Length: 405
Image (cartoon, rainbow, N blue to C red; front, side, top):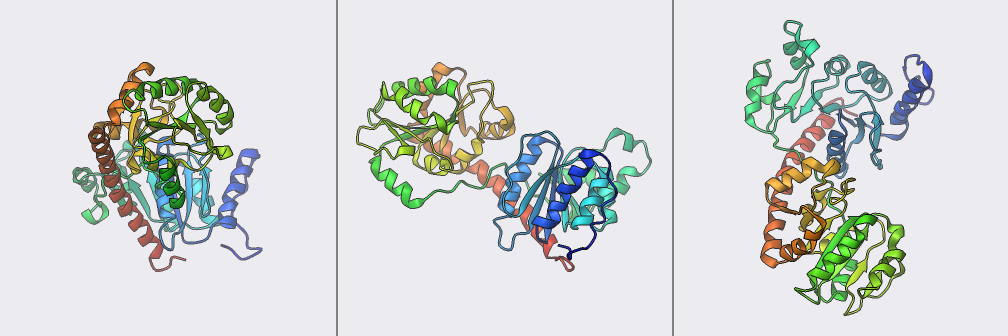
């Protein structure tokens, strides 16, 4: 982004933490190309939502690079080509100036509350357009509200506020923003980009299963394995041809799971290419990167971890996005908002205890029930996707404006 030997403009830093931050910011210059979109969240949940947004953005034709900043100390976010994920304070104007010295973003988009006034002011001073997402009413820290006219001045430095509904135009309009600055985008998707799969492999496995009804237990922790096997034994009462794809949270447990399930069922192990036979009842999917394949093959799934205190490691939106009806327990973990959206649409079935799983799977596998739940889940996905597409279109427009690199 800069010519060799050009100085970075970074201020002198003190302490290991400051030096580490400086090195991370220099990585923006070294690893990313312009144009550059900066996404900023002040919560771990917001960071995951922006991660999904950036995944979709990076699949756009002529996609820009992305810097995603998130709170310190959260679970590491996955990086990919064209994206860096960096820790940052919620409202740090010095960080804006330091990043701007390395590579000037074309736009800064924030999913935060309250408004990061000092960051907005610093970005405005550098000519970086600042947008907010889904802040339907102005929220400012109490200390800023003590200054007369402060909210109006801060709002005037915003390029746009993307609202979930038109009601938000009233309070923001009172601060001087026009309707052009207040686009309605709806509720942005929390769905990761749809998991892919090898179509030829899917067709081959569907043929090997001989078009039998399949249910999936995805991301199953060790202490739920027995629950899954008991539920499968119960569900087999309705159909002796029913098959279970058991996807363990820890793929290393594949061999032990095969021995455990093999004492009760005809079992095959994916990692050693066990053949699928006409009487195979449990297929242990102990491989990485194939969840998109399993969701597509299954009519219904149980989301592992939702019956234990740890909560699930996987988002329920994965299954909803691929038309797989979902059964789950009461432990939502870090995906509480995603579960709430799907439950509100009656797109999932929640159980209260472990011994209820078998009956829930039997009910969900009924063709009319599975189809209804899958349709409702897809509606949630589609509504969020439309909002995400509007936000992505706006980001690409900022990157295409005159002067953008």
